[in-house]
Length: 210
Image 1 (tube, one colour):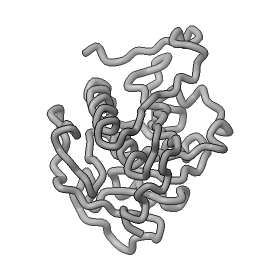
Image 2 (cartoon, one colour; image 1 turned 90 degrees about the vertical axis):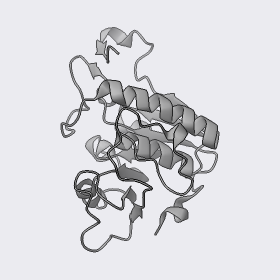
Image 3 (cartoon, rainbow, N blue to C red; image 1 turned 120 degrees about the vertical axis):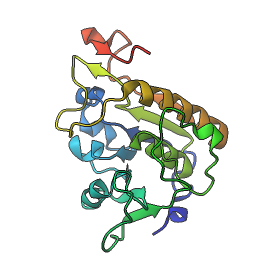
């Protein structure tokens, strides 16, 4: 399987893209039973669902995800080690070549780097999952758990491995990716609020201050 095999697989459909934010704690996993889901890293398995696709920048994660996800998409070279995939590639793993493997910093901007045949390598695996949804034809993307902050002091959905908390950087790049996908693919990007309104039913959200 290669990336071209996935092109327009979800054409004109709504794709739910999962991050690992704490708002996932307020959703029943059965909510996703009839939805097309692309999960970032372990977001799907953590809440007990099997996504259609999982995306990760990390080979170790991708190897584990290949056992619990239908399709796993990862970079041909691991983000941390820059090493090529080691060993056999499972049939459900898709390796994506990149124009550059330099770590994306604050200046990263998908609007200025046209990648017609690959998936964006952003500061978060979520950016790749978003881009993958559009590449696969999504008419609309609904982000879930792309919180870029804490709810009641919690950084991530319960049970998820701890990780980076670069909320200001991620927030900036999420907005750039949204604009890129709208302009390049015509994909509309939204985000799910699991509460009845933006007052969050009394829960406290704290995000980046800049």
